[in-house]
Amino acid sequence: MLVVEIFAATSLYQIMNANYLGRLQNEGASRALDALQIAEVAKNLESFYTIVADAVINRNGAATHSAFEAFKTQSEKDMLLVRKLADTEEENAQAEVFASAYKRYLDLCIGIASGSGPGRLLKAGEHQGR
Image (tube, rainbow, N blue to C red; front, top):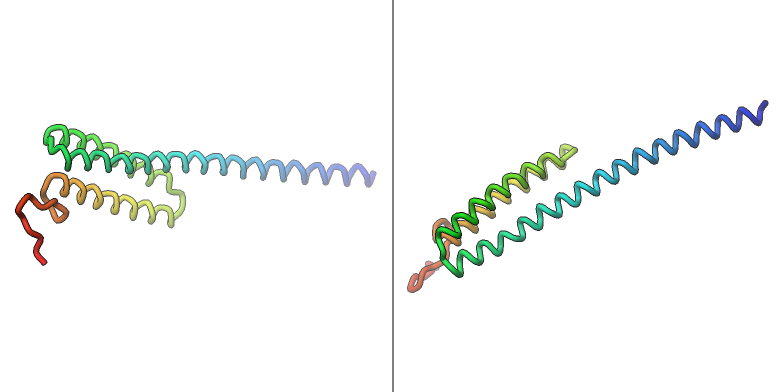
């Protein structure tokens, strides 16, 4: 009888541990999917460099405006996704820091490319005040 009780106890213990390990695996898989989505956001952000460079080099106003608008729409989706993926208070705070920095970066780059704002490029013959 004692052997049966020990066997039952160890079986119960193994089942409980298996369930716990299953939950850990599911959480890990979920975080891995989150990481892939964040990597996609980073890739989107990296692609903005090409849009700004094209705007600065080619000075095609209509195409530049269209590209900026499309990217702004995508950036809003990216910021929303980062906020949605945040699970803890610390992650929520970091998501807000990311969104704020992202917006400032977009504003600065659009200012440079459009020739307005604090980051604008100097025009030919214009001198930077020192």
